[in-house]
Length: 276
Image (tube, rainbow, N blue to C red):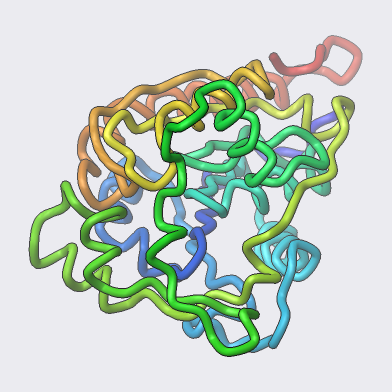
């Protein structure tokens, strides 16, 4: 597809947090990204307690519109990264703005086939491995009376999400988790091979993940093949547990994507070929 990337402009990394979180989830990683020359845009999705855009029932359409508003004014190469449930939004953004992106990264993220929910992936793995527990954080959630929003108790967050993080940093992260509207969690992307399917992808899998088990991560990669795989020996939050290793493994790949798009953009239009 044709590119609208300005190779002379700054490179941008748009970070999408997962359920119960906010832009703060990337604070520990931001210095590593900025040291590599990235301009960082960590969003607060509408409906989050950390967002000025409060909505009772936010959903995928709301999330995508918000992220696209962040992206549209940017010049230069853009990579979108979705952590955990933020991967669903990242996929839909890639469908919406495919020609603007150098790539999409799923950080222990939900990289789903079109029209699949995460629950569909769970069912598929449960069917293949009967009796195995893939429930992750679900049994620990505390729901409001209408069951329209949930919270993660701090002790459960420390056990499931943050077990391998430095103690003080883990306590801070657990304390910042907020209520999550279920409308913004039970979502599914709708995407096409001609749009999102043409955008480069990387999947950062985490072998010690207690939330999205490695089996589930591998299932999503098998269902949606084509992503470059990066394997880290850590839990669900590598940007806090292992930011230096994450940077060392991921950023050279992203820099390669950006360099390839910059080279393509400098070529005469009649000599260009679609980026790999």
